[in-house]
Image (cartoon, rainbow, N blue to C red; front, side):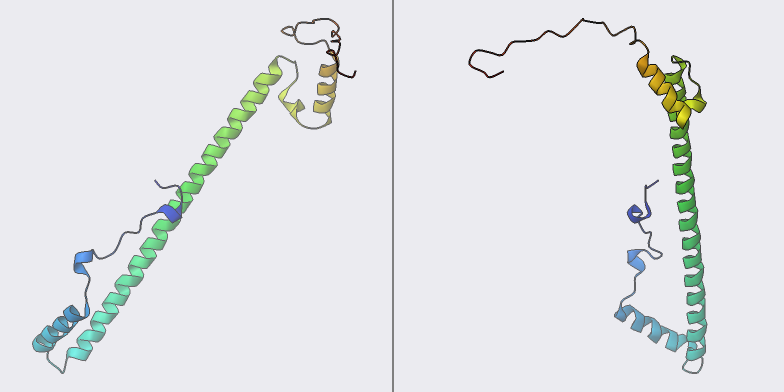
Length: 145
């Protein structure tokens, strides 16, 4: 299914081989005049016009309904994907907080800030090695200190 309505390919109602040019229309009118007669031709033309208009309205309504259904399905799919991403992000945040002893409720607001400040003041994690005081490197010869 395409990602957006702009990329959707329009399906023609009539195939290209059924398109009518001016010559074909004249031939159809001449045949209709012969078979129907000049007296009934205007009445038959009105009836054909009404039927064609009704078919167009019906197909337009069907097209609008289908487009609306497709848009709603795409929106529902995007919403479901968004909710799934939110659940994954929440689960990641909770996994990250498991080691700190904090709860999921401490992710927002002042309690979370206080927890972060307290954590920063605590000792460094075990995987960080203390290398002692930093060594001072003297400047190279000819450089100003």
